[in-house]
Image 1 (cartoon, rainbow, N blue to C red):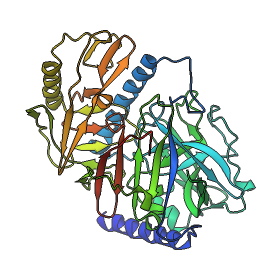
Image 2 (image 1 turned 180 degrees about the vertical axis):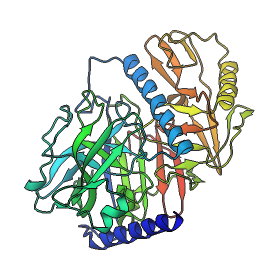
Image 3 (image 1 turned 45 degrees about the vertical axis):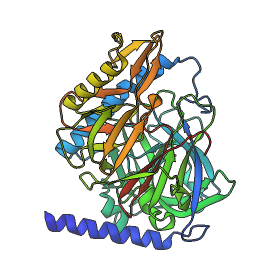
Image 4 (image 1 turned 90 degrees about the horizontal axis):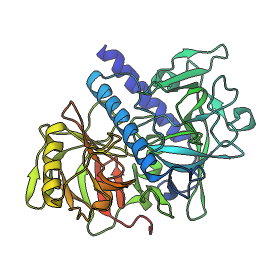
Amino acid sequence: MVNHQLFLLLTLISSILVFQSESRVKAKASFGFSLELIHRDSPLSPFYNASLNSSEILTKNAIHSMERFRHFQSLINQKAVQSIVFPTENSYLTKLSFGTPPVEYFAIVDTGSDLTWIQCVPCTECYNSQGSSLFDPQASSTYKAFSCDSQTCRAFGGEQCLKTNDCQYHVTYGDMSSTTGILSSDSLSFDSINGQKTTFSTSIFGCGRNNQVQLGNLGIAGIVGLGGGPFSLVSQIGPQIDHRFSYCFVPRFAKSSGKLIFGQESIISHPKAISTPLVSKYPQTFYYLTLNGVSIGDQTAHPSSTQGNVLIDSGVTLTILEPDLYSSVEAMVKEAIGKEPVQDPSGAFNLCYGADTNINVPEMVFHFSGADVRLQPVNTFMVNGDLVCMVIVPNSVNPFSVFGNYAQINFQVEYDLQKRVVSFAPTDCTQI
């Protein structure tokens, strides 16, 4: 079994190296580019639904966060061969183009997924809410389907061969959503914020022909996988972007976009930047950090688990803490605020106050290994209709936590995958 896994690993490395050597990027070998990053619920989003109020949106996001978290747990505990819950309403979007000539789409940016995929024709089952035409491989002069006997297909673990000898992929998400199609390559391009186009001529992606995904009216074409696995976008283009990327999330309803930054431009130069090591664990898709404690004022609560005990994720809205740690944090917050909490009728949040209550939300410090990340009220509380609720909730069972995207608002967060560190810098993300 070990020899077989080693063979697959070596095959995969060989395959990726071949693709990286073939990839002709229309820029110098070491460079950077920046993309707009728009929250799905932002007024700037082309899929913004003005009929939904902030309370409905936040409750939906909270429920989805817990679903996604439960499947994080199942993957880590059971080593299941599937991805996490499909990211939906609480996601950030960016634009990208596939093919020659390029066709533009909106896709979800997801640090918890590896394979980038979009819907393609012919499609046996596709969701109808994409908002643009499906990608047509035959209309692209640079499209290529991998054969079943290719190194790339074997390394990916192609599910089966089609009569055409094309390599079929299948990805199942934890909520039982799935995508099935042809493992392919084509030109992938981005329109940078500065107006320049960046093109990767042979990007591996999934051409989805059977996509059973619960998207509602999300309006997106697929996923941009930014996970740590070898088939993710950041792994494929790693040498060209110095194996680094960063993002800056704006508040949900901001009237400006955030940024997704690759390469040299992603390096944080802020004098208050702090860094914490990435911890290598299974599955390698996810980014693990070590949380040593959480402080409010002169009080500190400590987790029971140790190294690599928290995931940092772009697709989970809430921050989710192991039970004992959460209980201690909630007690500290209640003591600092000193007002009587009220119950959330939806049951999505554990600690809420009346919106008309004049509360002072304390600064909260997350003590990661080597990095004290200071969270402001925008990172920890959110208006939820006539309530103000803490967007930190407990994990009901295991000693395991997730640092969600709400906690990351107004931070530039840099992933240096070569040095294996994540850095944080407090930033007005509407201004970068």
